Structure formats: C-alpha cells, structure tokens
Amino acid sequence: MSRAPGWLRGDSPGLVLARRSLALVALCVLLLPLADLDVTAADPWHELQRMALGFAWPNWLALESPLQAIALTVSVALWGTFLGALLGFPLALLFHRSRLLRGFCAFIRAIHELFWALLFLQVFGLSAITALAALAIPYAGIFAKVYAEILELTPKAPGDALPPGVDRLSRFLYTELPLVWGRLASYTRYRFECAMRASVLLGFVGLPTLGFYLESAFREGRFGEAGALLWLFYLLIATLPVWGHRRLLPLLLVGALFWLGPWPAVDGDLLWRFVSHDLWPAPLLEGDIVGMGAWLADIPDLLPAIGNTLLLALMGTVGSLVLALLLWPLASRHFGHRWQRAGGRLLLVVLRSTPELMLAFIFLLMLGPSMLPAWLALALHNGALIAFLVARHADGLTPGMPGLPASGRYAYELLPRLYPNLLALICYRAEVILRETAILGMLGVATLGFYIDSSFEYLMFDQAFFLLLITAALNIAVDALSRRFRPREAPLDDPCSR
Image (cartoon, rainbow, N blue to C red):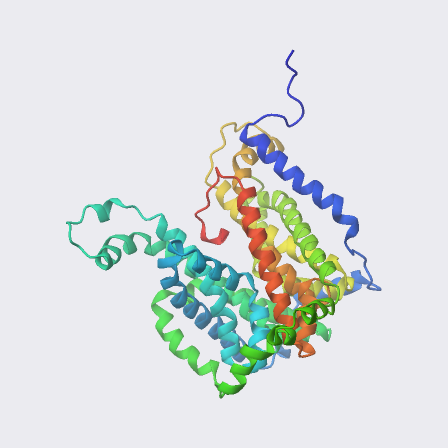
C-alpha cells in the first residue's frame, strides 16, 4: 500500500526549494552555539543613541577638506574599474577556452580588495599604485567571468547571415559586440558603484579616502562628523547617474589622474625580493620538507580560524535570506502606501550602499568585539541588496487574486513566484559573503582575516600569503558549492546579482 506524501515530500520545484532552504537554516541553527555572540559593551543603547543623533544632525562644520577625500575616492574607483575592465575584457574572450585561465581568474577575484591592498602596501606604500592594483587585479577576474557569460549569450543568427570569408574579428565587432554592448556597459556601471564602496574601505588600511576619515571619526566618538561623511557618501552614490554620465567619463578620467598622485619610485630589486623571497616560507625555498611541517605547525589557530570563517559566512548567508524575506515588501508596489514604500526604498538603499566593514565597525563600537557585529553587518547589507532586487522583480508581476489581504498576497501569490529568484540571489552572494567574512577579521573577529592582518603587521609575509591562499581556496570551493545548490530554473541576467 502506498503511503500518503509526508511533510515536504515530493519532487515539485517548490518543495525542493523549501527543503534546501530549511536544510540551510537548520545547519545554521545547529552550529550557532559555537559562535561567539556575547555583548561586551557596557551601554550599547547609549552608543546607538549617540550614533543616531550624529546621523540625524550631521556636523557639517567639523569636516576638514572633504572635497579632497571625495575626489580621491572617486579617482581610485574610476581608474580601478577602468583598468579592471581593460584587463578583464581580453581575458573574457579566452575565458571558456582555457581551464587554466578560468582557475587564474577565480583565484585573483577570490581575494578581497583590502587583502590585495595589504599585500601591495608592503612594496608601494600608501600610494596610488597600491590603491589601483588592489581594485584592478580582483576586478579583472570578475570582469573576465561576467563579460564571458554575457558574450556567451550573444545571438548567433546575425553572424551566420554574413557572407562566407568574413574574418573572425569583423564578425565580433559588427555582429556580436553591438548586441551585448548595453549589457556590458550596464554591468560596468554596477561594478563602478561597487568600486566606490571598495575605495572607501581602502581608508581602513591608511589610504586617505572617505573611509579613512570615517574610521577616525567613529573611533574617536565624533559622530556628528561621521554622520556628515556618511551623508556625503550616500549623496555621491545617489547622484552617480548625473556626474558619472558616459559623456563625462573622458573628462573624469583625465581629471582623476591629478588626484591620484604623487606616484612612488619603484625599487625593482625590492619588488623582486618581495615576490621571489619574502612571500615564500624559508623551508620551502631551501627544499626542507621536515622544516615545512614545523613551519605549518607554527601558524596559530589555523583550523579554528577556518571554522570561524565558514561559520560566520553561513550565519551571514542565512541572516541575509531571512532579512530579504522580511524586507522586500517594504519597497514593493504591492504593499503599503506610497510614503511607506519611499521610506522602505530609502532604508534599503542606505543599507546596501554602506560597506559591510563599515557597518561591522559601527556595531563593534556599540556591542563590543564578537561575531555579533560581523553577523549583523553581513545580514543587513546583503539582505537589503537582495530585498531591493526582489522588490524590483515583484513590481513587474501582476497579482491574479486581487481580493487577498496583504499577508495572503505575500504568502500565497507573490512569494512562490519570487522565491526561486531570491534563493538564486542568495547563492550568488554566498561567495561575496565569504570574502567579506574574511576581511571582518581586521576588526578583531577571529576569522582568517584577523591572522592575515596580524601577519602583515608583524612582517610575516610568508604566513600572510599562505593564509591568503587558504582564503582563496575556500572562496573557490564555496562558489562551486553554491552553483550546485542554487535553483537551475532561475537564471539571473541582472548585473547587480553578480
């Protein structure tokens, strides 16, 4: 006798997605007792009140030379994106023909921009070369991957209609590139917005972008000045379509060169020694296998650091999923009044525009050092980004049952149609969340980033480089796992999902 289907049994797409989501949440709940979530601050609510007052009533008069910091932030982001695209486009043309090239691109994009900055800081100091290399190298790998995916979807019919004998370059320039140019430009604009956030974060390693002054203001309790700097950054992002118009780009690129200087003198011998000697363990250079074992044993808390990194990434991913489910109705036309939706969109824009490291730093000042500030930062930033995209998707849907109340419209009509896309977005963001998890160690959380930062601080470059390789390997593995986990029936064409 056949049994009736049990709870969540069946092979329908909805039940498959439900099982995957519940398994992810259950794994996070099971491992949550291993996380350090203690609140060690004496009076977190008082700190929150002071920060909120500084944000609501910013002290504009306290700002010193904000235009210089803004100009450097924009210049680094602009040239970092331009160089990344310039390097990534030719790599994209060969991306699907070489497994070695795909592995190389996966490696360079798996290391966060701040870690690249820490690496180049040892040779080029606090200079434009450090800032541009920190953005251009990982962005080249990102551009290569995304550009290749866009080019792969080019319709073949226009090229097939050309007469025989037309060379491959002409086919590409006249029948393929024009068809995908809009999508390539759209993704490049989105990546420039990401570069703006990354440029701000470079201030955390000492480069005088907006992030440098933001960190100083928050750390010293000057919350009115910090609020003014944050509002400047949000205004900069909000007005990007105006001052970042394609017709102004040549002028901006030329003007940005003025703000990037001075350029440092590069010592070739020092650079070669750093690359060929300082980054590698001494036993490896000497061929001492036994010594390599002792060298590895001297790395402090390697396995706990890897475990904390993966655990925090899992918590951030699940937190982003839960918050995205809660937040997307705030910005959708299917719920609330117009003024409520405007407030919801403003909230999502503020959260998605604020870098995770900056959010974590703010929560750290409020709650004290633990995994809790990092978890809140990852969940709020990524949850708001996904909610913003899901709300935009929902606005294109037409409800078939207009008489339902808001709760019924959410649970029975819209969410089943939106959830495959939402879960696919979560899987796409999993690699990004892991990259951000690693750098949050720079704030004292015992992830891999904490030991990488400490190794650079104590000039143990071989140990720092080894930990960077571990971080890159974890990112590549999580990216491969998330590709298997995400719904196949929900392909994403939106560049913001990358």
